[in-house]
Length: 84
Image (cartoon, rainbow, N blue to C red; front, top):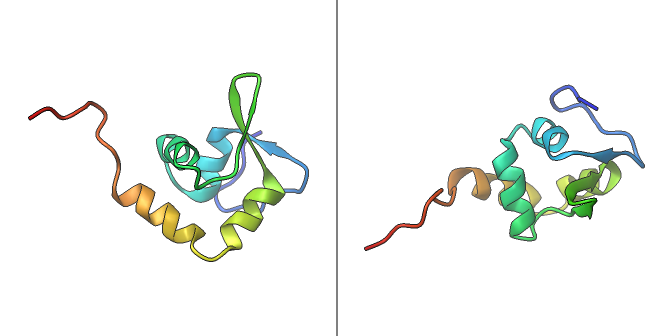
């Protein structure tokens, strides 16, 4: 299910990481980072992350959600560990 950028998702629909990245205008890596940091509500189904569209819309509207999104896109973690 591919969604147009910034299109409102329909309720009771499960979205993939790719769908969420498109909807939020971020990279898939940012979506994974938000899930890892417990900033984005997600469910694992068969080893893959899924997102409820209506829950995602509520998350987007809550106070601080867009701050979490901005923080995740501005401060990406390094791909490889940095050693002294």
